[in-house]
Image (cartoon, rainbow, N blue to C red):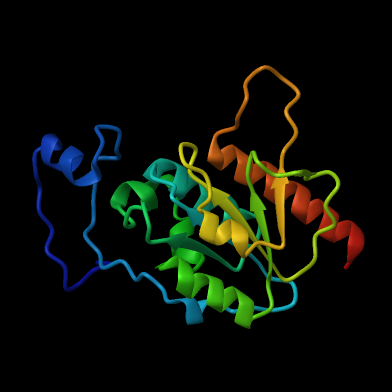
Length: 200
């Protein structure tokens, strides 16, 4: 028995669907306490790259971004408290387990900005209003890559604290990317550039 002190109950499939927040599930659920980390739990080293999510409301997108961030070896994912939901079972499910392998923090914007400044991270915000193409920027490390919600984008407070505001050039007719796709593209280019600048 992996959980000797737990209570096991057999319930109707509708109850499982209610717990999981979806009819698409494996027919089993477990109730656990989720440990939301603090900013100081994030270990900042010279190689560190963090992901900052501001005003992103879709829990599925947040979960996918956590998964992508862990895959690329990010040191943590930070969510602003303003207009960003709490971590939910749907978020954890969308992360495909990555949530348990990377610090995920939810904090006020002002406190986040102070934390990043004190630790000397370069702040790169990705926004359609950006003047610099991602193909022209020379990233420095340690870094934080910031992304905003698809409706409102990144707040002015975070944009003002950024070292650079970057855009991903559009080549097709659709005028924007899903934010989870934007994070994946941006992290891939960032890691590729870092590997070229600092080959191990």
